[in-house]
Length: 470
Image (cartoon, rainbow, N blue to C red; front, side, top):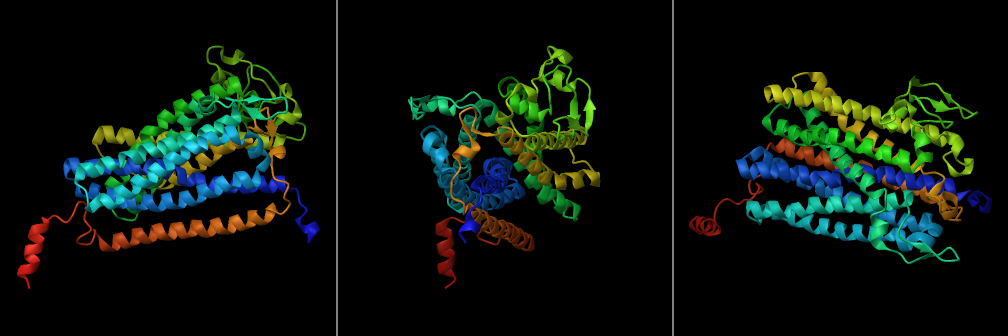
């Protein structure tokens, strides 16, 4: 039994953290963006007397509550995992790394409070006061996302501390920890991604419904609102992503060498689509586009732009060949999907400008129905670029991943336990959301007494009617 448990804990700790992060990150865009999407429908319903939009807002708020509850569970597990899987990392760096998470906790409680007020306020508050109770949810969602990304960006660009002669963290400066050099770029990228992914995920459900013949106004508005949010976010994300990539080129050259798959420092570097590094560290396979990587890195110098290759860094201070190939593949997947979603959004925009209507093509709806899944894949790929591209560091240039992990050889047991629990949780969440959708679809409209801002009768009139019927 002892020999069975005597395994290297580092790969298992990394695998468990990767799995739980990959699961949780699917919920984050919905947690950040769904409140804003619901508020848009809520505003339209109140301002223009749109019953369908108001009904969508009410139902979306209930879906949002389910997703928030599941996200709270998976987020809490992640918090425990930092201590259980990475005790050496937290023991040394927790004084600085924990600051953004403390801020995130404040946003979390603010969000939870106002979600409860917003949901229970549908029949207890006047329309406009109720609408405004949803605004703090949007703000808290964005603030919480920025706080968590600040912690991650600190791992890429550690700042706001000093080390004493023993290597212990001293003189922590909270503002510099939070607002490290990478934070503005990564946080903006993540927040825009949340609205992009959340919008496409919600819209994809209604696109599938329209393809199945549900062409009523309710489903059309259910598609238009979130898809428009996502379509607006796509071009913004292309600009933000390009800015972030150039920042990585200038500040994290080892990661950039993996992104662009550059073995040796040189200029006139091609943009290689797909491809990988072979056993000799050379690029094999893929489609090279001459000079494009150099041009995109710095358009001012064009093909003359010099890109540092993997040979510029010690082999033990950069991603391995396999990791670099994974980063490059994830990068290509992310960019490829983003390009497809941009074209889909442009198709939608042109149709809307010309005819104030959705594109009539079934192919548009088919691609839109799959856009949610594609957006999630792009999101996951982006995190692979960020996390695997930082290897072998857990705190770049200060602590390696292996030095921060637990020594407990039984960590593989918790890995399989987490996989089982999360699989059950994921299936249950999907079944609950589908059950809610089927129940509402079968009802056709909210049962009497559950309409937003009801009951419509003054209380005195309702009492008089009841007494007269005795």
